[in-house]
Structure formats: structure tokens, C-alpha cells
Image (cartoon, rainbow, N blue to C red; front, side):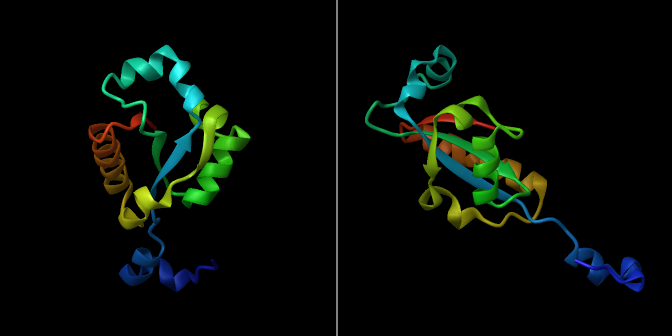
Amino acid sequence: MAVDSSCLVSLECANMMKRIYYVYVIELEPAVRKHRAFRKGNPAMRHTMPCVYVGSSVRTPDERFDQHKQGYKSNRYARMYGRTLRPDLFEMYNPAPSRLDAEELESYLANRLRSKGYGVWQG
């Protein structure tokens, strides 16, 4: 986006340049359960429920999923076991107006899914 120099002092322009943040959920392969750390972090997970990775980013969920799979700033579980995005679990929370809001939503969503029996790893 090209920015006009007169725009730099305008509050309206500054608001237009604010970053938009997203939360996302990646479904993981069931094989992630073999990792002791994953099991230890999810003592109440039900084996009938999926395992997921919950994160937040300035990137869109699709872009961030691709980055995880390519190994760029990736979580090892998301990189090794990431199956697909689960928009049914996160779309209603996007976009988040700030990084802080996205991080709070990430924690809220991770805790909510854990309470339902999901195996959750949080970014």
C-alpha cells in the first residue's frame, strides 16, 4: 500500500494502517498423542476428540498454516502433524483488532477446546 506523506500525520490514516490479527486452529494427526509432552499438557483429552494447535498471527490463517508446514517460525507439532485448518472452530473470532486481543482469544479458544476434551497445543 502506497502511503502519501501527508497521510502520516492524519489519525484517520494511522488507523487505516493498523495491523489486523487472526486466531487459527490447525487439526493435528492423531499420532501427535505419542509425544509425552503433548499428553502431559492434555491430561483430560478424550481419545474420541481431535488434537489441535491453536495460534494467533498477523498473517491470515491460510498463510500461517503454509508457514508452519514449510518450517518458517513453525511449531514442531503443527509442522509435523498439521492436517488442515479448522475454520469452524475459529472463523467467528476473526479478525482481532489488536495483538493483545488475538493473544487473549488464542488462550480463550485453547481453554475452551480443552474443556471439551480436545488435545490442544497452544502457540
